[in-house]
Length: 379
Image 1 (cartoon, helix red, strand yellow):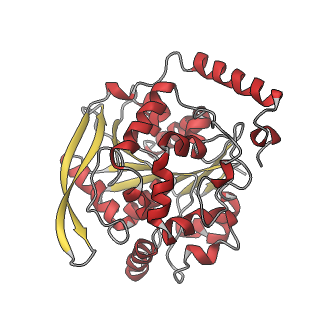
Image 2 (tube, helix red, strand yellow):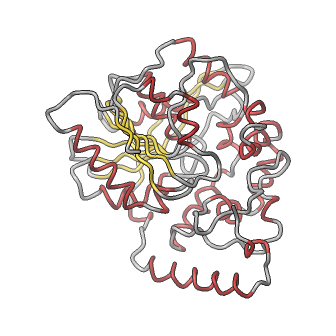
């Protein structure tokens, strides 16, 4: 997937394109998103620390609250590696609309603390409880949950666990993964989906992975947050022993294409606060098994709420359109709308206009008098 220039450090064409890209980035970000102008709120929430001995504790969760006088609320849930500010394009698109925006840092990310047990105290239901705690603190009784990457799975689980609170879901990139079948470890999936090898590395050698990620946080983030036009090397994500090894022939990875220098600096500083260790809880076998068991044992796999699934066309991680078919995701969502947007994994930042318009159009249908189910696929 990666073009040859990424592998040829001295290639003059690559140097020209890099210089042009930096110039274009400077011009396009002259009126860039400023994460420092938004005031953080914090709330203390109950949390279970499952490492022996099991104990109840408290964590401090940070979130941004925009338009707190609006009656309808959108909760934006990030994935990995992200913090609240990676919703910049959506905040800018919606902050002048009639919606209240709540955008948290998940536990272990940015300004939000963690019960200090990455192996077994970072389940998806744990994160749903965190979201409910934030909503309670903001005195919000219902919300539309918008998630990206792992945030999508959190939103889907939130809708399944608490349909009284979460009235609709927008899932970006990752489709709904029902827990109706038996548990499958990521190690079993790697032969079929080789780009998931990094997840097995994060699980099997979490401390070693953390050291690699923490060694140069800016390089880690630049390696991960790429676009279709500025992609990572083909081998990226396929190693079971290193996250960044595929980039070893590139001395300096180009800046994050869809961020200004200020935004990138903010993101680097956010991950510098705690490092990556507690963010890797998504990937441990213990958390995965517990999350699946919780969903599977409850038995309610159908989401009755309206769902908008926005899938990128060129995500190097997976072909999500085909994955959605294999998972039979739509069979469990009677009121689903599926949209496909050109772009890679960070499609909401790479190509925000069609993403934001799709969300706005879909939100408008929720406000219409018709309540009929709309199972729609645009292709």
